[in-house]
Picture 1 (cartoon, rainbow, N blue to C red):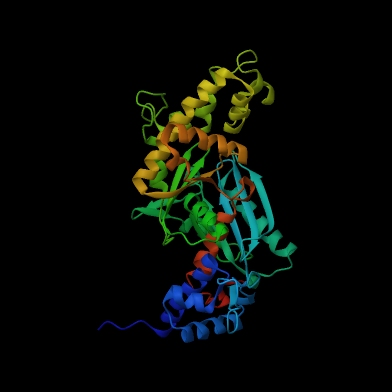
Picture 2: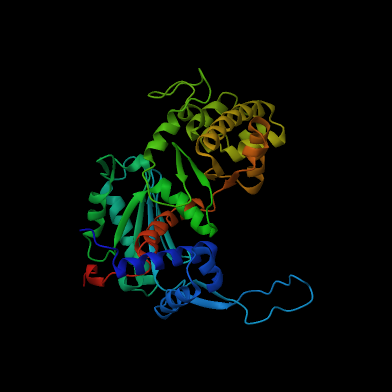
Length: 416
């Protein structure tokens, strides 16, 4: 005989919905919360009062007055706004990339308290990476005068290019992080460890930092030595997006285009990776043909970025303009395909290194080649390059707080 849902499960589900709604739509009043969740005001009051008593939520004051008829003040008491208690617990995050390891500590509002970064290269061992995460975690907890009881846990994101080195393998069709989780958890001073795909987690962190409810799909595009893509849907359920990264790099955006070993001619990897774009500009790069670009990069082609290419075009490097237009045609094809295939409302660019002015240049080219509608969907990620660890923080918050409705397990996992 099938049994019904338990009271504990029902409590967790109700609290989970409340917490996520407060975070995404808040600060928010009990009246508006009840309306959004379609729960009675009495039930919302009972749930939120209990969560306030436990320190999960706080009342932050009255809602601002909005005069609708310009004459009379509204009757009755104004709405009291609720928000997540930023200092209820703290959270740690880490991201393992092929060029940098990023670790940080933040509040429940994703406010950064401490951070540390370590350069990574093909010779950096798995043991060195794990040891850096552990030592950085211990130092941050100590420097902030916290104990493990004050920390929800640490979320660790692994970039797809690092899964082999970190001994993350496929099991039953999905990535299995159990060996990495165990390696980190074996150290007595580590809090609860959760691991996941860094690309998807960066997309999640970007949405969390915006604190807005996602009503449509978002495409998250990571640019580096590899091009990665994650699709974040409104329900924000965790999935494995390594397949999307792999397929993205093999997509053909310029038939019979440039060659890259192991990839089709004219593929995303051959046309748009950082190295591919530098190789394209290298064909005209010289002190005579691209004087401005040559000057600002000190004659090192490895220093050239997309932002600097835009600057050179603006300064009158005609040969650079020809290459940039070709590159932006390829980006336009890729982003147009993303929007059409996934009905994406927004396309978020991460690690593109674009300033506000650089983003305007990027969108101007996209508008020319793909139309105003596609260009209007493009925004830059609000995660800075040195704060990638926020992706891990989002994972720890999702797994250890929101999905549990703030009902924390006992602390028996914490070793004395």
